[in-house]
Image (cartoon, rainbow, N blue to C red; front, side):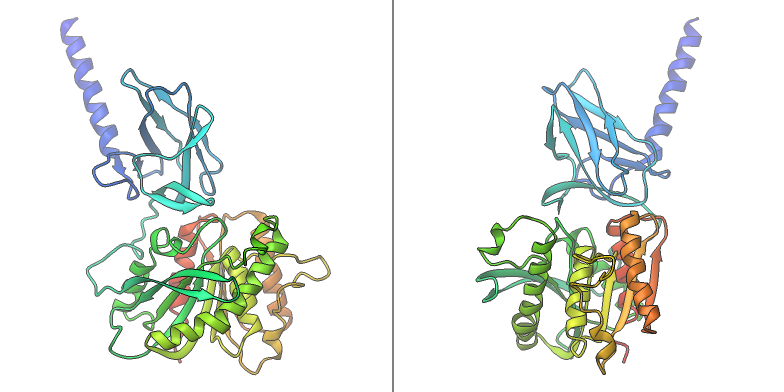
Length: 377
């Protein structure tokens, strides 16, 4: 009987060791933290210390399929959560602790859903956005004072590895709703993506300006947060980019005059609006997970001057990308743009990201594809 107990204990210990070895600490965990962990099937484990809590529930957004998983509390005050397999990609999440939204103290915080939010990466097996042993560009902080919004506007600028050796084209790049200018740097891993592409000679080196996607003056800020406000903000962004930001960038940085514009989700609308409004300025337009605001059944592009592309002598290259698991509404927006371009025989490049939702792996892949196709001439 004693031998049986010993054997059982050994088997249990071995099982626990195998279980532990199958999980690896998430790339989003803070240095020195063991959790959250992810295994090869996309299952995740969380362990958080809320000793005084009565209830802890894991909640998440896109890609986590609105997952809600209850936690079990151990005698030391730690709450342990294991999930079923989750979708590949980057996912925001948080804990509902006795009814209060609380971030995971073990992870990096990313600006999403309008506030600092925890994130977890479910590996896809790709490494195109990993830091590698190549020449690195750098991201610098910059700002200008805008007459349109009557205030200071912050933005980030990626400078390629060989900046200083010659003049470069510029990509103006926008984030999505609820995010800010840190999105492409932190969640998007833009520096790694571009550094790797340039090292492999797959793309032309470029400067990238990551502008803030909200442009309202103090009176307009008081408007309700709905689509008309977004359209107004985007039209203001058009003025800021053309009248203020482009002149500022071209005066301060080593640019060669070539420009492209792109964005994700709400930023896709802004890129399409500004690019269509000024087709003579941009050689390429990138729409990642396209969104169209204030359209009607009869006038889907009521507030999007896409028809200008047809009238212009300059025909910007048009790229449209989407995750194959995104919500139906994004496919409807995507299809509306494609049908219009097909009907008017306007050339475009379409990309569909395998197995991804409306999240950052989709947009990293879109940038990876788009960057290889622009500034070639």
